[in-house]
Each structure stands twice: as structure tokens, then as C-alpha cells.
Length: 362
Ligand code: NAD
Ligand code: IPM
Ligand code: MN
Image (tube, rainbow, N blue to C red; front, side, top):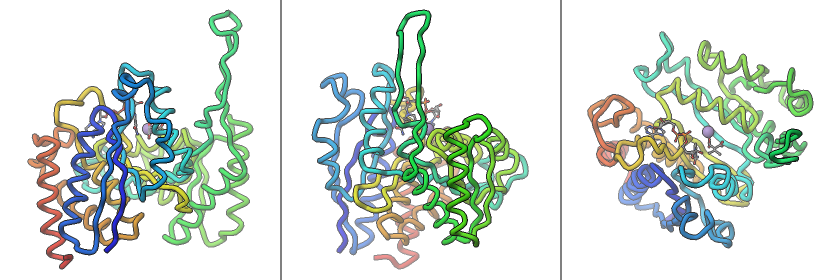
């Protein structure tokens, strides 16, 4: 029997609402598959915790999280606590401390009715963004000089180390080779005359070891255009931290919105736990209404199963999401339905159970 210890950080806003449904799915899997079990430990960290305790997480938080096989996170950040504090002290801190330098964000159209792009099919919109997740524009390096004075200057420095740049680019080449897909690097060497020139050089250098991988290189502004006009150009994309952040929200927009966008923050060496979360945030505009779409969060459970080597479950979850997308009446309002978050989750578990039985999983 494989037992996995999962740390739950529901976080803020709709975070707890969607994590609840993901946990339902994990509990259903545990019931259906006698070879698997999960133990959950919930951490109450987030903005409310901050307002009460003056900190986003406990001092020994990172040490405590180290013991887990995975972290399942909802969302962090809420009005009342400055975003740069809440995010840097919890979400970004975990990504950095646990060297989750790979962020895997699939941009896959699961149902053709969901794209606002005219005439684009499932075959056209089916790619993977591999976002650098530990440094770059998110290095947190900078300075604030002469605050409040006329000569005030603010610096925000992007940090691109040889090690950090090479490892993400190599990871992407490996993935492209394994999947026999093209690899596209997205950068901005024309304007960012240090960081992105370096990025482009590393992309070319590492590429010499992968003559079998067909490559493309686009500037991020043009790439943003192609995400919308010609998404079929992309198979595997590798890009820097900030560009990956922005591009994957565009990716969400062309595949059904934030309620369907997932991301895995992976430490490939498995030296530290990896973290699974939807791409969206705490959505203060809809939180507390019970209408958040939990499918992104459920999809991140599928990514977690793949990461655990339980690909069978990863696939059943993804297939069940596809099936659910045909049942508008069971979907949340963002996808045109009238269901609540938990009604969607309950229906999902019903379908998952049927699908697992059909496959003879026991
Ligand atoms: P957001 O992703 O929370 O919301 C953007 C829009 O998408 C909103 O209109 C929201 O209602 C909608 N949306 C998001 N998730 C949805 C879902 N599951 N179902 C239906 N609709 C959904 O982005 P924001 O409003 O810019 O940020 C809100 C807060 O979340 C900020 O504090 C921000 O810093 C934080 N944030 C956190 C994360 C994270 O924890 N990973 C990610 C993004 C933003
Ligand atoms: C994301 C989020 C985070 C990021 C924020 C909340 C710091 O937008 O995961 O996409 O920029 O990485
Ligand atoms: Mn983002």
C-alpha cells in the first residue's frame, strides 16, 4: 500500500473552497483504490492568520513542510494584507525554499465550446508551458532609494544565474525529446539586453546537445500575439518566471478561463516536496459565494497523481474533467452552469467513481 502525506494549505478567498473539492477527489480515490492512501495535515496559514499572528506562516513552517510528499495549495493573498507581503512570505517562499524551479502549466483545450477563439480546435490548443519558477524577475532583488524625494529611484533586478537558467532550459529540452515535441523559447533579447540575451545564448548552447529537438525562439510580445492568433504553433514552451506568469493567464483565457488553469511547482530532484495549485488567485470578487470553479484545483490533483507515479489516476481525473465539461448543468457559472462549487465536486466524484469502476480499478 502506498501512503502519501499531503500538506494542505487552503489559504485565502476561494482557496479553501476549491481545495475542499480536491480533497473530496483524493478521498474518493482512496476509497476506490485499495493500493493507495492519503494522510492530510492542514495548515491554517494565509492572510487571516497574518492579521491574527502578524505572520503568514509559522517560523518553523518550512521545516514542517519538508516532511510531506506534496503540498496542495489553494490561493494566497487577500485585500487587507499587502500582496507583496502575503505572497513573498508564503507562496513564493515555498517555491523558492523547496527549489520548485519548474512550473508546469498545461494550456490544453479540453472542450471546444470553451475557447473564445474562432475555429480553433482541441488539436490547435494543446501545449505545455514550462515556466522558470525560482529566480529571474522574481529574484526579489532591488532597492528603493531616496524614498519620497524628487530623486527617488526604484530598482527591481532580474537575476538569471547560469545554474538556474541552464537547469530549466535543459528540463524543457529533455521534456521535448521525451515527448517528441517542438520546443519554443520565449524571451525578450531585443530590449532586455543582459538577462534575455543570456537566456537566448543558453537556449542555443544547451540546444547543441539536443539536435533531435526542433526549436523556435520568439520575443514575448509576438508570442503573446501567437498565443491568441496561432496557438497551434506551440507544443512545449520554456520561458522566464514573469513571462510565464503572464503568458499562462493568456493560456487560461483561450482554454476556458481561470477556473480551468492548473500548475505544478516541481522540484525535479525530489529533494523537497513539490506543490500543486490552480493558477488562479483568491478571487475576492466571488469568494464566499460558493460559485468558484474547483476544476483547476482538481486538475492539479491529477498533476499530483502523475508526479507520484500514479499516472493511471492522473489520466482518469483528466478524462473525468473532460466528461464533466459536457454537462453544463453541473458546472459553475463561469462555465455557463448554475451549480455551486460543492455540487460540481459531488458530481465529479460520482463520475470519477463510475469511470474507475469501468476501468476495473479496485
Ligand atoms: P484571480 O485569479 O484571483 O482572479 C482573476 C479573475 O478570475 C477574477 O474575476 C475571478 O473571479 C476569476 N476566477 C479566478 N479563479 C476562479 C475560479 N476558480 N472560478 C471562477 N472564477 C475564477 O486574480 P486577482 O484578482 O488578480 O488576484 C486576487 C488575489 O489573489 C491577489 O491577492 C493576488 O495576489 C492573489 N493571487 C494568488 C495566486 C496564488 O495563490 N497562486 C495566484 C494569482 C493571484
Ligand atoms: C501565479 C501567481 C503568482 C505568481 C503571484 C500570486 C505571486 O500569479 O502563480 O501565477 O506571480 O507566480
Ligand atoms: Mn499568475
